[in-house]
Every structure is written in C-alpha cells, then in structure tokens.
Image (cartoon, rainbow, N blue to C red; front, side, top):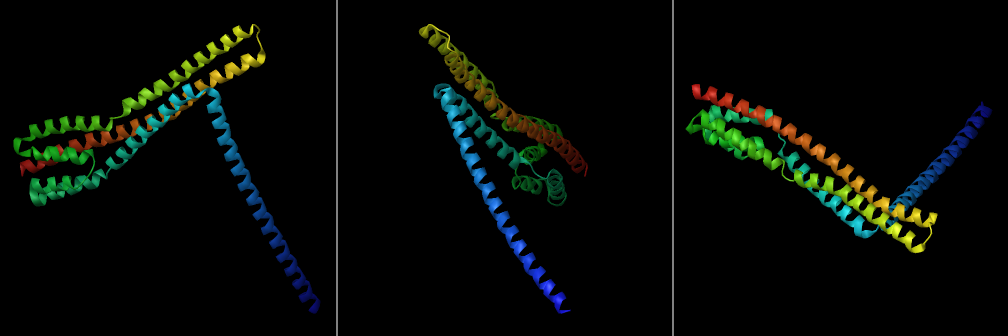
Length: 251
C-alpha cells in the first residue's frame, strides 16, 4: 500500500511538471505568434507604403483621395439607411391603435415620435386626411418619391469615384510608360532593368485604381440593396395606410 501511495505521489509530481512545462511552452508559442503577427503587420505596412511611393505620389494620391472620399460617403449612407430602418409591423400597429382610440391627431403624434421614411410618409398622408383619400394617396406617392431621392443621395458621387479611380490609374500607367520609353530613347539602348522598372512603376497606378474601384463597388451594391429593401417596406406600408384609412373613413 505504501508503495502504491509512493507511485501515485511520484506520478502526481510528474504530471504537475509536465503541465507546467506545457503551459510554459504554450505561452512561449503564443508570444512567438504575436511577435510574428506584429512583424508581419509592420512589414505589410512598409510594403504598402513602398509600393505607394514607387507608383508616384502625383498619380497614386488622387486615386487614394477617390477611395477615401468614396468610403466616407458610403459609410455616411450606410449609417443613414441603418437609422432609417424601423420595425414596420410594430409601427403600423401603433398608428392603427392610436387612430382607433384617439383619431387622426393621435396617429400623427405617433408618427412625429418615430424616425425613418415610413413615419414621414404616414404623417404626410394623415395630415391630408381631411382633404379626402385621393389627396392622401397623392401625398403618399409624392412624398415616397421624395424619401427615395433622399435615400439615394450620394450614390452618384460613389459611382463617380468608382469610374474615376481606374481611369486615373490607367492615365498614370500611360504617363509612366511614356516616361519609360523616353528613358530608353535617352539612353539609346534597351536595358531590361530600365524597362522593367518603368513598367512596374506604371502598372502600380493601375493596380491602385482597380483596388479602389473594387472596394467602392462592394459598398455601392450593399447600399443599393438596403435602399431597395427600404423602398419595398415603404410601398407595403403605404398600401396598408390606405387600407387603414379606408376602414376608418367608413366608420
């Protein structure tokens, strides 16, 4: 029995040692991974900066400005559309309940306290209820177009930057190629190093322009999809509003 306890004690000490060694090894491996990640991040940053400078700031900077400004407009549109999204079913139920209990003014008050294009359309329709359902329908259609225009505001600028970025890149490439051929003409001989260096610098501007256009195109399509979703909600809510007011008018 004593031998068994001795064996178990030795085994426990050995397991503790192994666990401690494993923990130290895992910690060291984690620190190594973090260090490698930091080195990779720094090297990636340095490579990007080097390629940017190699492409020539006079052509790379306009493309970068197109990307930055386009992203700023896209982020602003995404925030605006996200805040415009509400729980449509809950809002319609609140308006219908207020209309039944407190009349048109109570329903308008619910619309005032809500955000988004649907609440604005409902308020405009309810505000013209005294003029008849035809006036309500015209107001809803007209103000729906206004709200759609507000949601699409800024998309033309994003589309401009999507088209402008690769054009500026191609222009920088053409100018760089002309400079490379001028250098060849001045040297009087075709040097592989001279030609390769000029072509590389020229193509970097095209690469930058294409990257900027691809990034902005993704944001553009995402914004368009959100607008389409909101427009569909607005149309469904407008039909529901006419049905609610028709039923209320009969009472």
